[in-house]
Length: 497
Image 1: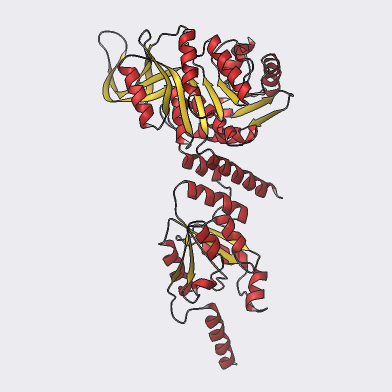
Image 2: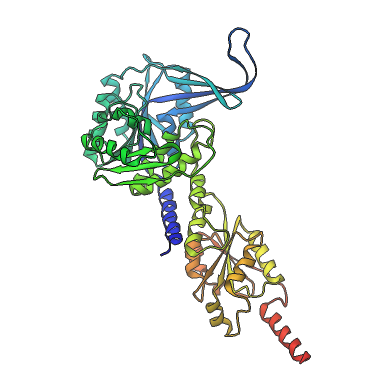
């Protein structure tokens, strides 16, 4: 298998995992926050002090902390069950209401009238953050509250994975960590932790920690160069061994992620270069997607690939955002070539199109000597959906069907001409006599053939209809065919001769 083909096959697997994230049960336990954004313009400096005057344009509230992690889990189609603490105040009420609007199960959220809901107010002028104001009570929650959180979680369906989102605001106390990690061990579930403590040994017994480079350096008591992976591995290994972890996934900002496993093996996943607008919430996105992918059956490396892609999309937006599955699938499906694709490339792209909610239309044929009848068929097919996939017979396949004198135009040239049409989104060449295997790869919503076919004779009809799709027969232009054109040329040559 070529490097290109293995790339596409790997991407196809990642897209399948992304689909399998749906309906997974993920518990998210940690510090809940309300992120507030005040945006405006700055035209002058205050006469009262040397500070900018912000003329307020709009105000937005967003879920922050563990609530933002839960929002990303829910955005993947998983069942996000949130546990944490809010105050009996306006911010806490808004947070709970917004969680419910986002489809997050809040049965594990405890309302404590002795604490304030954590709020972070950011003031931005022309998209530049000028100041941040925080309201918080960061003391550890009592054992009574910790026990209540766990008891509420345990009343529902068992988790497929547990995320601990620790912002060091008191919810994940020593007692809470011990209780949750012990429960996960007993039930055979992974615990993935986004840590904020200086001592990463506090998370002993968890499965995976996802510190950023600064957090790892702080825990190690030394500076770390993001490009010195050997040094990062050397620092990470004793932490993994001392805390009995499975692995560390170290986030490296614009350099991607580094996996360090218990046996000393490491693997780097580079970041996809994107314009960075705001890194707020990127860690939340990464841990949410990684944990959900692992719960869906991914390997650590596959989960990192998906999480890395999602985090790259998140930093392109201002503020903490939830990245939709179709955005992730589109980014994963980005291919180095144009419209002419292999069957494996087609499978990956088609999976991305379906996940994005696009209606995939498929048709096939020899398409030797492109003519007006072909164009009519293709334009009619394109109108039946959002994406048109065209499969053409290889030269050997055409010879078996049409005889040794065909094709007139080689397959690569036919594919290039067809790919140049604006109504066509992908062209692939198949070697078999029928397009059945290509249909299995594309899984279209609509299979189109000309009305010269009987519906019962359309190859792949059962496959498409079983998958919930349909077959459409479209009218053909009279007397428009490659065979007729070739025959006219031959007659003309004979008359001249």
